Image (cartoon, rainbow, N blue to C red; front, side, top):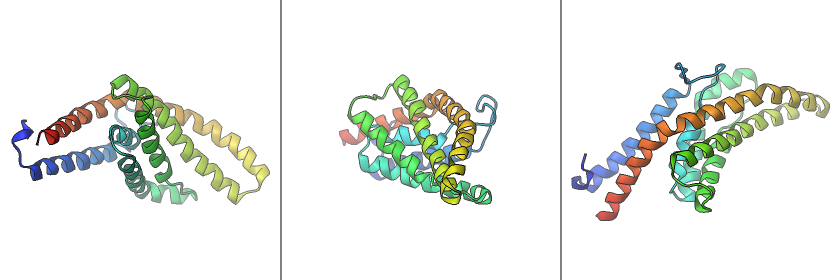
Length: 197
């Protein structure tokens, strides 16, 4: 498709459609467990992956805003299930951190836009994101219980969560090229055509 011939408003509509469509796809894939997409019931962190793909070559404002918006969307999706457990951590903090760290790593040239670099960064940033969510659970337990019980709870939570965090990070790193590559090519094409006009 030659988008240079399109009206600027139509190009903007395509960008919005791509963003909304790709976020929608990630939201659909988040609870889905297809063969090869899960290990021990844990799947990739699709919204973390999208936040990383978006935050590369964007401003700090765009990266942080994407984290906040996607975090609120994920909170809305997981709130009923989390509320029945008695703990309600927010994903806003973890996804905003991922967006800001991606921006920072890219601007400091620790991260480039190659698939290998992005996959490794996805692995590491998924570890960060899942750890932040786990720490929120721990803080809530510490608030509700005494310090002594909280220390014991920390060991229990870490023993259970560490395998989930690692599996999620591995799967996210492996699946990232499938999400990142088409989005990256499309956004590059849109950016190049916007510079020509």
